[in-house]
Length: 430
Image 1 (cartoon, rainbow, N blue to C red):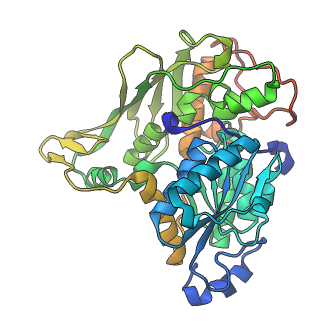
Image 2: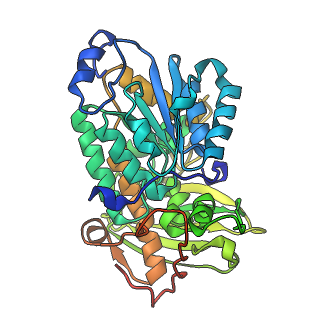
Image 3: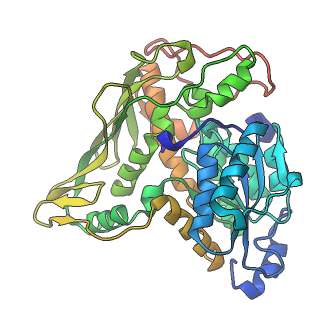
């Protein structure tokens, strides 16, 4: 969730790229996987983690991974900023001193640091939580190096990135590598039980729904005289579309993914609107502060979506799935003749997603959520594109024809003008 994230970045331009059985067989399997790293080393059952992007969410995900199962160690760290590596290392040691095996020569900084982590033969699993604009590149590098991956959601900020993630996911499938995304509701007991009942007919035919992520303000970093434009945008990444995708993509993708789960499909058409009414100061970059989007599914059913990041307003974060015989709420409740309420125990879903990831690797049945989360990410991107331009957008066009690429021309510390705020009806659809 966005309110748990901190500023961090790690990546290079996307233009640079346009055990699977038993413990006894791990070593031989590792040799069959292309890239420098094996799934596990020399038959050991230890999962060794390299963290790419060491902000609040990246560090938190690494802690969750160590909490998730025995035999997990963090052995390498990478980030654009040295202060992030040091603060992350301190926090990791505070939480799991005996599981952190990071030495100074395994701490990397700079724009190419992710490559150095992926190249380490001792790394089995990459945990990456860089800003979404860099996730397609990081996934591609990790999979090509033969690494399993946990990557935060969303996984891209534009259709080009979505296509890259889908291609990397297919390569991971061919290599027998796992990809688990940070859509933790997919691993949360109340949501799993709810969806079992919805898909089993408890609310009849699914005919509509609503989803919301309306909340107050988040952290913001103001530019200082010492910061170049690039550094400032990287540290203040929530507020630039090329880095975060805007908050409908960066945050509201959670709820949109739940609706896709309920329908068992992705929307065929999207129409949205939004604006920038409250967060208008320069430190808020070029994103909107509110959206309202309608998603039309193949059956003709429609879902109304709202998201807002505005202080002093009512909060609402939930999903409602409407059927012909009742309705289901994402927090675990069904109304109607098949009424039900979740009353069981559940493990922290931020930990459970890593437990499921590691269990799949060790069982020789690696999870691969890459395509699914890429599709949900595209839904959110379509909502943003529609709101920015004032145009209705079809799934087929966005997935197959859109040429939108938000990547800056180059990555270096220095000037980087902020793109203008979108104006519906004037901003072109690309």
